[in-house]
Picture 1: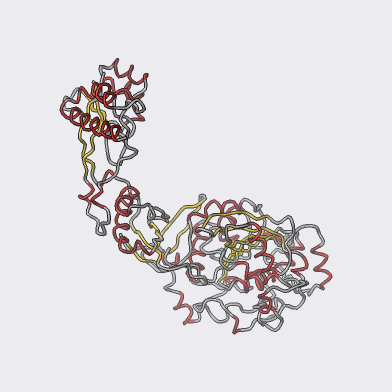
Picture 2: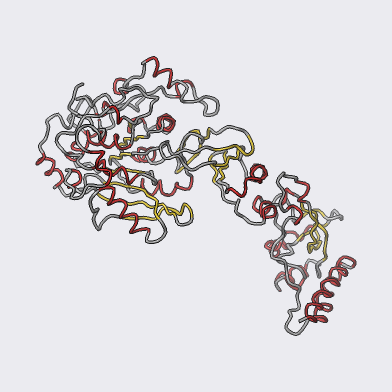
Length: 581
């Protein structure tokens, strides 16, 4: 054992000495010196390093010093006539030393030749090349490899290599890029290194001008979180492209997750042109806008006033204003008013109705809002239960009148584009408080100039020449007529509900959470899909199901825990769609 280690040490020492003094003879020293000291069980080639890395002296650095990352690496190389470059590249391209900001093929001291620098992790001696490569090099006059010292600097290392060298482990390598912003979620033990981490990513990630770190959990009400700027400019207003559409928003004020792009397109693919989509927690429109672009009629809602305004902005930006109505309501109230006002009309016309509920932490707690949507006498709202944004007028619900469906709880706030909004300098909320105090917030149903306030159901009624839809409850259909609607064989409401579950039996747990929130079983045809792993032992799931008829009629055997919020008497946020007051 000792002799083997001693032999390896001496062989390595002699190899380095001979290579530095006689680089042309490196081929000879590998074939003669190493086998002399090696045991029969040892191979004839020196073990290659697995990777190149920055110097060990940078470990524990908290203030970025770029010059400390300089290091000298001994790399194999050879020179060849310029006219043979094309031929040689066909055979050694994969063995070249490839690093950021590094040229592995460069001019040699002799202007008529090129110097080829090879990766020491792949090649160390001439015999490490394939026979085909050796034959090609031999034909070009290259019969051996030399060795050369090459200085590598901070510019030649990736962000992951720099951080691994500093931290000793790659637990700061995960990030998301939203527009020009790189978003980190650093763990507590990385607090002393956060300034360095931010600067490294700012240096290394293309097109990033701002690095932020989340400093608390996502706030449940508005789905946003506090963040700190670690490096770069303090500008959090961005524009991103997703699935061919443009979205503008302030990342510090709304929720946006680029990792959900595939899920957004997956759900939209479940919709057909002419379908009706109610997006209960719409955010800035990643479901609503592409659905409208596909030809669906969309009712999009979000309680966050910032998200609401950016939602309106993105609807106009993507030219789908004629198909989208926007709302700034509590999710439960949105279901009990907007959906409730239109549900019978949708059922009469045989329209396919989808409801998207993308609030994984709380969405299942809003499922009780579907209980009794087709009951004859929905209750009036209780002002104490109005959870719409305080920045909006108190009368934002303004009982559903007998006009268009857009009258049902839709309020219009001055659009940021009216001031030639650029996305970087103006705050789209700056006019909100002014409009509120002046009492000038108008009903979009009275203004058809922007398109977003038009009745999205105008194309669904062929007999209504004025473009409005007759109030579905004006005739006060009986409960039996509601039952007849549900007996047509087509689902009235298809829900796409998201939730978080643990890894153990995640499919069963997701179904159970939905059924507990709804107060009824959802049937064997319900679809449970895994969306993504959010954290260890925490998965995001989607449950797609048709709301059972007995739920819509209020006939549930065992009410869910949240049922107390839906007792008659005004605590469920329901409005009387037939009221004119």
